[in-house]
Image (cartoon, rainbow, N blue to C red; front, side):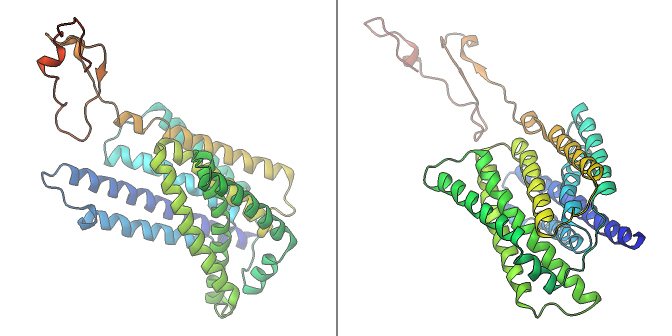
Length: 344
């Protein structure tokens, strides 16, 4: 039991470190964009050394998450994504001089408390993820039923998205979550088989390894596609917490069904674990709530306060211009011979 806990703890540390590195990389990329925007003749962002440094750090963080799945259960690693969100908020306060709000402190506290409960009450089972183990789970009746239901739901949502043009955030992020469940299953299988090959017997010669590798790549590509669509249509302050919740729930269900990670767990253990998930969800929501709106506040011009101009409405400044636009000509505000006013 002590040896199992040490292996799981190593996986947890890898996941936490990976998520923190991802947080740093996101803030570095954001800082590079801000620097380029302040230049008189800004270069493309992909020519910035600082931006590429952030991309390199992100790749390293994702590799840490990938390796973590080889040492710990999905139900333990997947919810630790909240570390990336809360860590990014802390770094942005110190590095980008963002405002620290009371809701940020409360959200971080709840997220840390939830993370502690997740780590303490996650399943303590350990599995040697060999090719034969993955093959056994892959053809199990539980996973086959799960896959049939998932494909059915995915096709229905895809029909509404493609044919009916329904692009609601819940539909887009549900599509992402359904793909994410395949991603975490395949990532753990690939990472576990690589780890098993390094510590015991070579597993990379089995066809199931390459099947899982293809599933991992394909599901990641389409997952990014739908997630990008959601970020284009909706604010990040809404997409981030909802996506984290959907992804975590999907990953936990996948771990329970495919790898049977909660098999034989006590009711109290499951309850406290789920309560820890709830605290982390609430913490992420509080940290991201209204954060973008603070940077989007713009003043407006009230034409009613401009001498000689009689207007009944207000205009917003053009965000793509350095000026507030031009005022209407005097002819637009004069009365015609019939006594009517021209519309501006």
